Image (tube, rainbow, N blue to C red; front, side, top):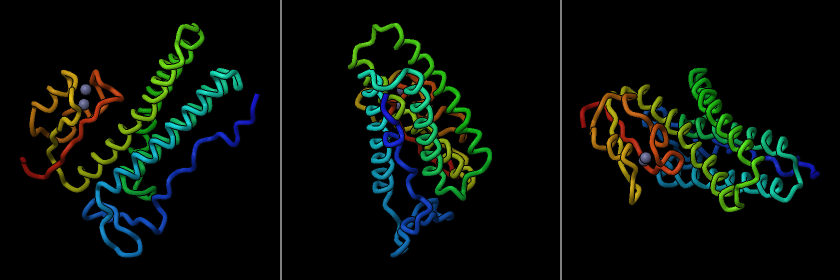
Length: 219
Ligand SMILES: [Zn+2]
Ligand SMILES: [Zn+2]
């Protein structure tokens, strides 16, 4: 058995560092030194990069389990901790910093974590059956990182509500979306909160690439 202390997930990204300042009015980050807006694309790259880092952590942990270096229980516990760190950071990133997180935001993260832990429990049970290939195992590991974007979308929606937005619209981006996502996008402009967020209640699930647009007037 190996010591997991050096395999533990990366520390939370430093969103409250002086490098980034949250601008409440615009709902965007500014660079701490120049005061200029951090381009959305740069923000999304930061988020994607972070998710990729955690994805690598999931793979590392999975590899240790597959090679018999850690027990199933250790793997499950450490993976659960990693999932928690990931969702919390995604929520903070979507909200615009730790200081902006409300107890309702943390409750929403908690609700999401409960379903994630259930999936993880099922994953562990399936592993004990010994019928999963290494490729299937790794594929399933990736879903945990991807599905964390839901926590990002949740706090982003909360920001929009706080800013007075009353409408939402779902946009498709994948080359092929599932019937659910197509239906959500087809509904067009609707009241905020009345459609599921990307990766929620759809067949593509963790692989969904849809986005949401918010507005304070009918678009
Ligand atoms: Zn879908
Ligand atoms: Zn989708």
